Every structure is written in structure tokens, then in C-alpha cells.
Image 1 (cartoon, rainbow, N blue to C red):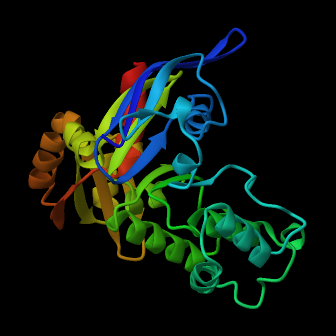
Image 2 (image 1 turned 135 degrees about the vertical axis):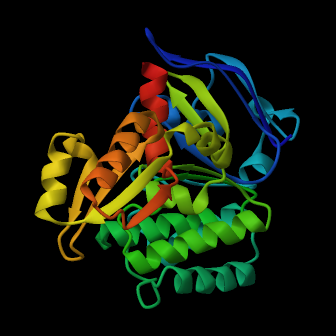
Length: 312
């Protein structure tokens, strides 16, 4: 067991940010921590990093309570928090990396080699001596990531790691996180960028009002909502087709692709009656159905349905 979070509660005055939270992390992977604003995501990460102290409950890392953990625990951890608060603004990127490398007990030659490697990944060669306070937000984000990765940590906490990055660097960062995960690093990731979630995460922890409403794999969540699978019907874009559809279909299901002269109808399994009427209408009016294509729901669609269903 890598982490065992047992009945974790954190209150701030009359507000309870986390309530009797129980989470088990039994194997390495990339865990997406999701939830609306105020769900308890940041509080959870800060408790794992010992920035905050629990009101009650315990966190165990490799079977040991982190309440009593010292430097050995922190040398296994890398973190990027919101606002790049792990940076010293009056120091250069290179100086920040040297400082954090030494703090983690790395030899100077290891720091030099790892710094060059990270500068290449982040495309920051030639900027390593610029003071962080004078860097752009995107550049600051890169330096923050570099300081978190300098010691190749076993555990990585990342809060919006690709925010403010250009596409090329974003893909490089995603690739580096994937590589570290494949080498056994456990990653905890918070992000509102669904494409990053889809590329990186294989496990999810969904928080709402300080309580975990889902813990498990991305695949299991998607499979649990296969009932939301949709089917797309492609018809010719003609006056006759539009007139026939006008009284039959809900307008939100209709997409017109003018360039291809096609009409696309997206229907869920719950709209089976519409689908039957559509096929019957096409047969009666001799409208050719060009294609029928099953559409697997995206992670974004599954998450939206999950939250709506959970609140419903």
C-alpha cells in the first residue's frame, strides 16, 4: 500500500473542507483528483504534503503515519502548487534547481546533468540565468515543474501542471509525466483541462463537498456510463430532408455540415423512439441514410453525466 488515507477530516472554523475521507493508493499510476471548486482538492493535497494538519484521521505512506515523517518522506516527493509557490522569485531558474537539488541531497554533478536534461525538455536553454520574477507566467510554470522533477521523485503532486504552457512544451511535459509514471512514480494530478486528463490519468478520485464520490479507473467509470453511448445518423443535406426532420427531431440533436452537404443526427440510447421514427421516415420518403456510426462517450461527457446524475 503506497498511501492509506483513513477517516481524514479537515475543518476551518465552521467549514469542513474534508469529511471522513478514505482513500487507498495500492499501486503506482496517474491519479486525477477531480471536483468542482470548493470540493476539497487543494486541501487534500496540502494535507498529503503536511502543509496542513488534519483535524482528525490519519495518512499512512508505506505503512507509516506521515504525522511522524521527516526529511526522508519529503525527499520522495515533488510538488507544483497553484501559483508556483515553490519558486524563489529573486533567484534564477538554474539557482532554484541547484537549491532544490541540494535540499534533496543530490550531488552537484547529478544536479548539473538533471538540470541540462530538464532545460531541454522545457525548451529553456539560454534562459536558465534569468531571474524567475522577470519571467513570463508560462516560463515560471516550466521552472516550477523543473524544481519538482529535479530529484526524480517517487510521488508527484501537480496542480494544473500544463497551465500557461505552449502546445509543444505541454506535450513535452505530458510525455515526461508519462515516462516517470512508467518508471514507477505515483502522480496526483488536478486539472480542468480534459485533454490532459484523457492523455494522462488512468485512475480517478472525484471529490464533492469534502467526500469521495468515486474512486477507481477511468475505464470503469466510462464503462459504467455506456448507457450514454450515442449513435450518429448521417443524411443528405437537402430541402426534403430538413422539412421531414423539422417536425420529428429535437433541434439540439441536429448538426448540419454544409461543406459536405450532410446532416448529422446524434441520438442517445434513451432516444430509441426517435431513432425508430427516423428510420421509418427515411424509408417512407426514400431518404438515403448515408451512415450509422456508434459514438463512445468522451471522458468529458461521462464526467458531466456523473455529476448531473449524482446531484439528481
